[in-house]
Image (tube, rainbow, N blue to C red; front, side, top):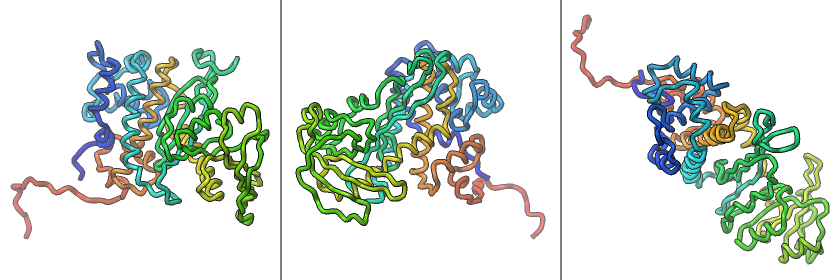
Length: 388
């Protein structure tokens, strides 16, 4: 029988607590706190995300039921609904945002050699946003429309391992294209974006920093063709052109030439036009790259279905952002554990197994591989053998 830590304790052993304490000190999170530290708060909220708890009362009920195990889980403070609610309300959400960035940095280093469908040395990013609807009368700070509240989750996803490289939470009124002003382009990397991010001044900024973009063109795109490359139309390609913008403002914002690739999606019967500043990769690869942008949509779908970011434990802006950032930390931590243990499981399957075995005393590897073994007892027994 396994005699070590609980599943929950094994998971948090992968967390760099020293880095967490640095984040807490940066924002004085434990100032005048005596019984329920920021670490206790994080572990309670991590438990809620891991086991998909419905409310604060649900979290506290489950934890208090296992009162004799809380110390072994790392929770040393007294857990109560009012204490947890006050912590989410008043302790700076930036603590958990910074700690999530620490975990993201660790995860990206682990997944940087992840095999991709095409051998490519450059990093490929997919940028998109997802709207989380809120009730305006309950969350009056989340301005979106006259009768509707919402926040936006903006994510730049590294497609090697599907680890978010950049995350920002804004209110619903912020247009997606404004997020481009906060990105630091990595030279040689590819950025995949939908046409909602089409702004030629910002495209030219990427071009000047030697970063490549692939984006859908709008229906009113105006250009002059300079020359065309031959294409194999049996693959769905219609044209591969080098063009120059002719609109008054677009031509001023993007004075350089640009590549236009037209592709017909036979499966969905869509005629797609892509714009890119990379002239070396094959035209069909441009269309294949853009297809991978769907991974960021799957990321949003995954965290909305399997983590608690659509229903919230508090109504203040601080409580909502705290919950979202801890949810992101949960996603990244599960990815880190999966990679370090070299598990051949999907993140969904791994999370479901962990969610129902958090209090079990069994090794994680034994749990997910169905390997049954017993630890050898080092102590010698004085019991005599009754029968030879």
